[in-house]
Length: 362
Ligand code: NAD
Image (cartoon, rainbow, N blue to C red; front, side, top):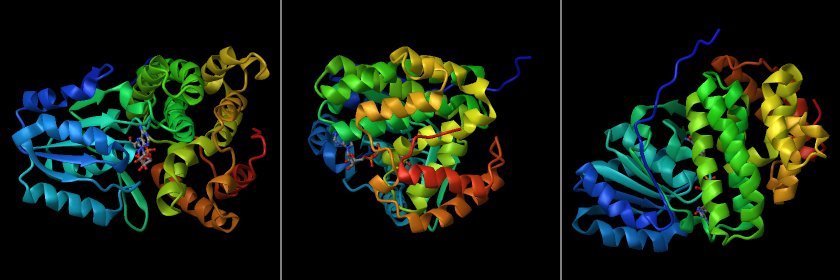
């Protein structure tokens, strides 16, 4: 019997090539007078365009962000916002810039206008993360940006490797939707539509970085995938990525890219029917991928096609760190009661396989 809860987002989405030129008007429509602008280094030129639009509404700029939002950085940003009496925060950049804006918004309750430049999808979620000794995540309505300005032109210069790994971060949001702790039919639907778009757009965007149509499709896919993640919540895959990324300092999108086929191989061994729709979507891309019946194999084939890293060793994970990572993840998972249950020994096997990069098996 159908039985679920779902919270509709109240975000405004502006999506078009050149949309970044609407940021000033969107800020004005919010009634904000004192804006804190958070801009990642790669978006310096875009930040200048936003500064011009904000004029007197600009109160201050933070141009330094770090992945996983270290607590001291978050604390500094919050103090800066309070000192400036900021009444809105505009973020431009990848998930790290959005993440710092979230740390400010959760503490101050001011609205975020997010201008994403990767496929991380954080702008579509109320999830925020802060990293002290360990990375912790939470949900807060203030962490969900009030306005999202999607401008595919800002992604034209994204290098192929970032396009591939960030795109696979979005694919992970999409594929994991049916097994999130609050999985529901709406999130699963968003996830499947995201997967269809990402499956087709990412190979084009990797091969021809300035293909605006491919960039727009990938960005829309990332939005849908982030929306799927927001509704379904963080399960085994995300919790494992947070341990490897936050606690062990590995790059977030690359960890997602490597781990996803291994986690899905385990998950579909427990619940094959749950991953059948994703396997079918991936199988449409390449009928040779086990006739569209194996989602893990389909994901691995997509990663290889995109030229993404396929082993933890390749992205700098030390084999010696894996036992501690498995122990930490097992503890986090036990605390969060994520299903299906997985014990530390099975996590070790999963991480060892992912470290070597051998083909994932169920
Ligand atoms: P990132 O924001 O750290 O960006 C990676 C690098 O790419 C940076 O050096 C950045 O300056 C550069 N960059 C960004 N956009 C670019 C572009 N268009 N062209 C060239 N370079 C560009 O990486 P990310 O993967 O986007 O975000 C990772 C962070 O986001 C992690 O901290 C992760 O936990 C968080 N995240 C949060 C959520 C959520 O729902 N809360 C979802 C996904 C990711």
